[in-house]
Image (cartoon, rainbow, N blue to C red):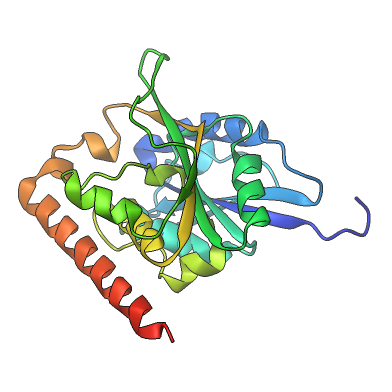
Length: 254
């Protein structure tokens, strides 16, 4: 539309060498997204490191930018990628995952319609190595997620949330106010999800929004991810952050 400013959804992807070949599928899923007039997506790919494996897999597209930096894990890479974002919204897309058709438009419509919502999540289908998919039959109902609801569920269910942080769509100013993703070796996205739920209402979209790839190289498949000592430490610092945020919110109320 001539003369109408274009607004962007910044799609942020952290990637390291082993996952780089999957960027092609992620890109196809982005190209299949349809957005309202006046909107476009900008894909920010941030390598977690400065190697030579990722660059050959980055699509040649003016809507895609690629950056490298010191290795620090996916949370650090995503937060670094925020430096290159300019739009009012940020969508998370892991390098080995794929968006389903219509995902960005659904996310956008909800937050544009209700300024009181800070973020959305959606249902996930596991994408198995043979190409088949598997769903989950205990997702919550479609609708708003009140503040504290995810935190309460997480604490009552062995530190597992009822909605998936890999599907987050977030107001950029809110994401920046919370400092981006946590600087943890894992669960950094869960930490962000719980922080968001502590300070702002969200919305769960019951339509499938993501194909979550299962493969041996993914971070959650590594033995270090389930080490009890490290996991306990991660959960403790996430819990402490949530408690501190909850108290800060109370203190700010008139």
